[in-house]
Length: 241
Image 1 (cartoon, helix red, strand yellow):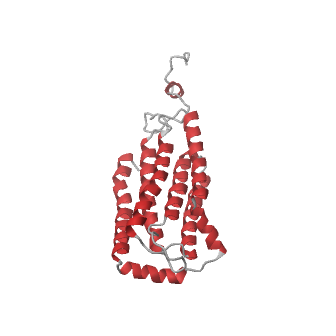
Image 2: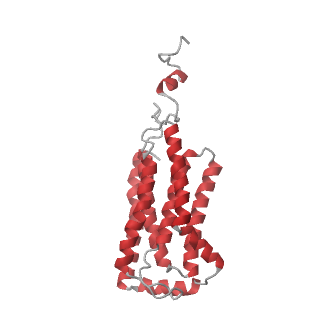
Image 3: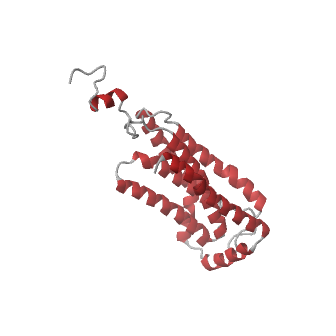
């Protein structure tokens, strides 16, 4: 897909989760019909056990953020070693996205003041799910940063599947254990998608190498003079061909 088409598609990609998030938030604040459906669904799904507890832990900061840090370090090292222009921009975008999670979730929790499920002690501030948002942004950003650095399509697919499994596993564990209502989790998916779209946009706009005459990219570490020589045009350092 051309770059311009991708940028035109971005508002649609971001607009849908934003609208869904706004709808869910309105229903939670107004105690609308969706809340009743949400509570009945939670009642059918909640069954605390050891597996759901372990899965919910995947959204802990102590678990998810170190995974992101490893991806940030590798992407930073790879970009700098490859001589990529503005190599620091995609990792920085990932750091900003992760920092925005608590900055956005904490005020929303206080404003919506939603009580927890019957499986939790009486308390408020459960909407949206901070653990889900942490998992979506941490694992999703790690996948976005590592994806273009992987050569094998099979490894790329594995990375995407692993990211999805970690996020879905976290979400299932939180609902199954009764830590969150289903709508808390879905709202955090929406919030996470918007933040990941920002990371992807920044990464797309950051060159991974110089543009070739046919619109492609020069592989990192290959200079323009080397490219000209290989295409049949002598460079200043090459002899007669």
